[in-house]
Image 1 (tube, one colour):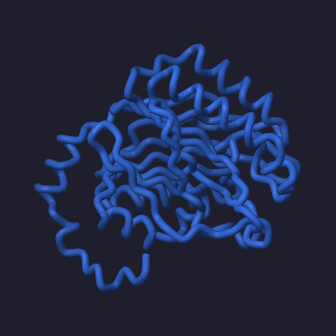
Image 2 (tube, helix red, strand yellow):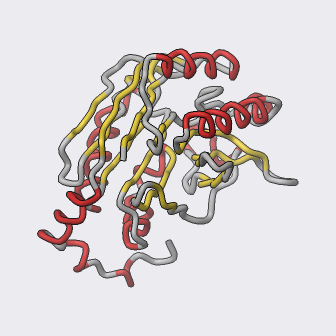
Length: 259
């Protein structure tokens, strides 16, 4: 499976500008049919607590763009969007757009309480694992990366590719890179971490989007600037590695709790 991870310097509260950035970057990229394109958390607005900006009129514009992108390129698109629950708080999502028009939604299980997210966005309640190109894929969002139990639960349910889309600030960049590798190693899974770069009114971001193999080796690293990284994931190699070193067979699922 071919994966493209798109690292953006997100323009604050400007969906049209960010959609145009994605279009421009993709003009220079080849996405084979059947590939997977991954965009950062809240890619259209930046990580904002202004829910009128993130879940207002921009929702329909962003969804229309992502639906068309998946359909026209014949790829799976995983992107950070916000949607509104009826009579409730909005939710921060990793939405999955499939070429046949199907839309799957993972709602961030761990809103970032220190940044006020839990006061403005509802917490998700369940994992999402979907099939694409023979792989089982589980998406997560930013702060989820600090909670290994949800990644382990997804792996126990069959996940082979783990994704974390983020707006992860430069002050904790070492945590980002360390935790991405840890999630790959401990779950013997491919790990795709897609961060933003640049600045918003409150924080700076160092990017560092990475695609990591199940042994913990870094396949691709975006560095600090806007751009695209790519990798080809091999299911046979992953299965062989898990057979040769069957660490996951010793998992004690009774200790996973509710997740």
